[in-house]
Image 1 (cartoon, rainbow, N blue to C red):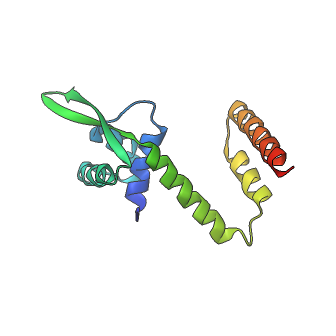
Image 2: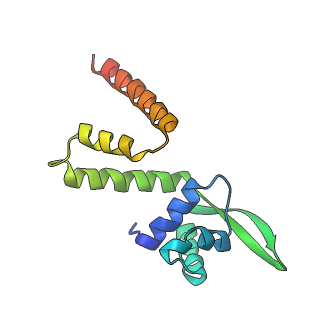
Length: 132
């Protein structure tokens, strides 16, 4: 599936939210990127049809009923696939070590970074055990 920048922005917003969001909330969060209400509504319809997001509830906003959206597991898979494809495009100039180092340095929260390092250590041990 072909995803443009607006699609990816709305997916990012929903994937990082702890709770389902209405299109108005999505616009508010994506305001700095120029996201509009009409764009949000068009993109959410497209993403629902592609099963990347789903309706997770209905809520009142004033006198109007609004759908609340959340990302699906398929959305995480699609984002992961795009990331891997991007890495493959640059793998001849960017080593796995450099890529992981850059990702870890991108995390400003030192506690979260420490947790990520622990998870990577566990993964590396598992991969090493499978190799033997």
